[in-house]
Image 1 (cartoon, rainbow, N blue to C red):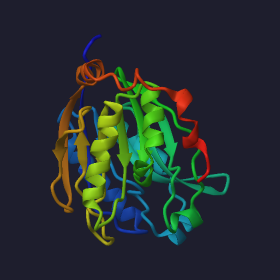
Image 2 (image 1 turned 30 degrees about the vertical axis):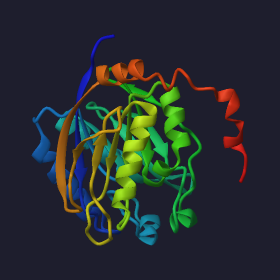
Image 3 (image 1 turned 45 degrees about the horizontal axis):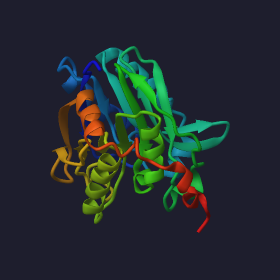
Image 4 (image 1 turned 90 degrees about the vertical axis):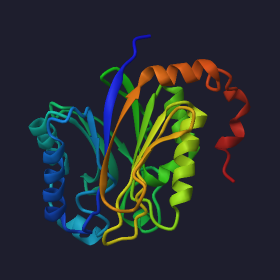
Length: 262
């Protein structure tokens, strides 16, 4: 199988809750600093434009999808970003992927909503992969990390890379890192967790990439703002899956209890 490589950039940024204009200008500035550096995908955290001020989110009319589409075109690079998406009067905590031509290739609505999110957002219900530059990719959001069923579904569908757009809080940094590595190891794929930096809210940072053996191969080692680039290779995924064929040895017919309500 032909080896495909991509350069992934994690943007660990602080978000001003409810101040969309400030956050959009910040994102524009970050994109300018990365222009022409050879990245294939630049990733931003959960709700990076409007944040967690739900009252302002409901009252503000901003087309976040158009905003990121235009940025992708201007900078000739693919973008992953967590947005607040409104459809037919309902709000969703969503992560989207735009290619370098500004085309939105995929969106995922957060399924496992947390705390106050449950009062404002509707949960998603679809778990799919998409293809970009020969890579099979799955998108997830923050709290979905704690539910390995989702990552296993994506791996079973052929995913080689999972990207979690997140706003993971203190004091759970070790929990965050452990689960990112676990999702990578058990599914033998790359996992990137792109988290918010500490700013107005208490986010733990530590944006991380784990490889298909569960080793952390790139990490922003604080809760401060920062940017980290790493190159990934499909051959690493395929070699690991040949070495330890977990996915081939699954016995789904024995796992029916996982679907029961506890």
